Image (cartoon, rainbow, N blue to C red; front, side, top):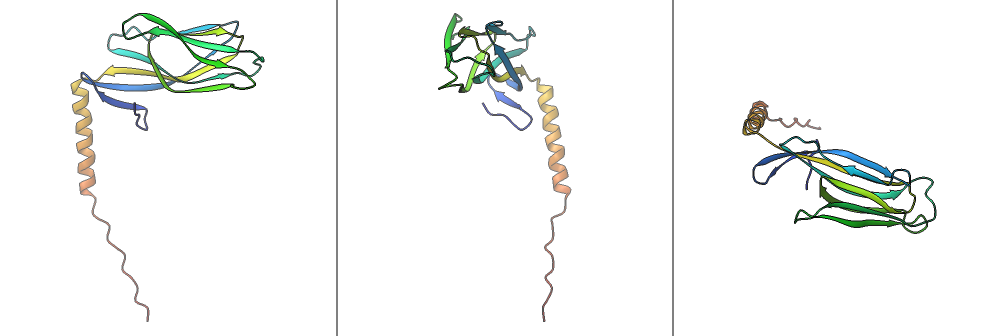
Length: 162
């Protein structure tokens, strides 16, 4: 996926959709061993969780910490997969790249006491109405007209040296 500077982009799937991204973070420990990410119940929105990093927090012990995610696979069945096996002395952090899952997603500290911080992006895809697209096109046309009205820059005259 690609993002513009304003963290939104339009994707041409079955129709036009708008993608917004927001920071996501949760901390897992022996006191709070799991976190469930769910999207809103609005009809036109799809929620995704793009996991980027899993790292041990301050005060983590010299022990193995295993983090797993539970989400639906392509057949609509729930499946659990370990995504990180962390240890303070040899692997305190894992970069997952752009590990994207559709909500709902449960992140669990399967082994260890943590604290483990999981971070990434909360992505929201919404359908863009055709009227919204035509408004954006009108704005683009106005910008192009403004650019056409600007006169070209003339080069400076050089002074003759004698």
